[in-house]
Length: 455
Image 1 (cartoon, rainbow, N blue to C red):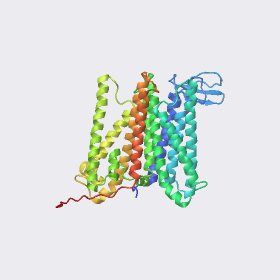
Image 2: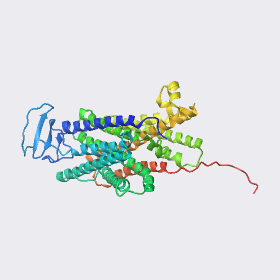
Image 3: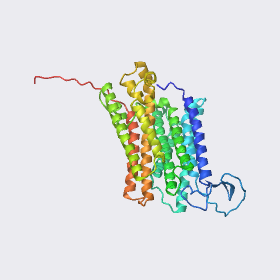
Image 4: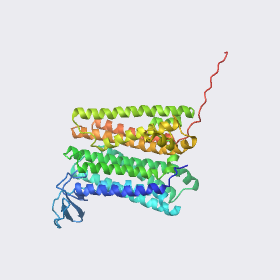
């Protein structure tokens, strides 16, 4: 059972977003951050502070100076010149490898017009390149930190990053041994495919979420060092992160039959689990689903109000961070989803608003059986997207706050820092196990009968 939209339609968007994201991150690292280098005399945190917009491309034993402020002024070769070029290949390699090549490897099974064996080989090669670039990207972080005297593995971004590359490697090894060489039996292959797909999606979503953490972490460092929160570079980084998230979303959308395999993953962990775990009839579970989502939405709105209230009272700018941008988007999409339980036809003809889509479709006044059946697939997909965004944005929030605290003197390896990081990890694990619980077999509905006995 799948959405009535060809996977190829989504993959075209995937390709476009992938190229856009790569172009944006190259503009950031080369134009704003000084260039790409394997070695540099100025040791700094992966990226450098901004030095007069001087930029270049590193070549063995020399720098080719391209220009200042976008205007070519000279070309020279010199082995010892210090033009403040940082080691900043990490974001480019991680985005190009794990996110873009990994995403293209995932959609290749759906979009390429080749036979099964050819698509398997392409799938393997793209994942191999993605994993190799990811390993090199992580090596560069450790290399730069060690040469600069900066501590390693203290941030949430680094913790999840190591976890993602390890899980990516495990997934690659298992897939190679099972589906390529020496290869498993037909029974083992058929039983492994669903778990291979689910595990791959989870690892990929973690990678996309962690990329967002990386963008936020670096931008927070730069803003604390004086970068304009509403300047061109800040907006560029935030937009790059959002394009990256959208790329990941459309990668998953291209796998719509897999989404049906995952089950009714709608919004909010407990709400999602309720459809699979509660031993009630369908009507009762629908009511529980609606009530829990309504409570979640209400608490979310109050939470965002308190953030604006605190910023206004404290004289802090609003809506400058990636966490804020995605947070507003999540709460708006959450509202659309919670109040979206009628059919596309009823909703758009009678209410002309997606905000009421859910409530009107499945509760009051309710759509026809055909419209409900056609709407449920999109309701599920939309719910998955919003839920993943919500979990990811909560991670961004933890990282952003902890980064502020650490820049204000909090011990990076202290009790509070570890507590915040572990809290975020538990939050992500909660989302992961919600998915696992949803794909497990649901119990049959239970009808309760009441009777009296004379004894």
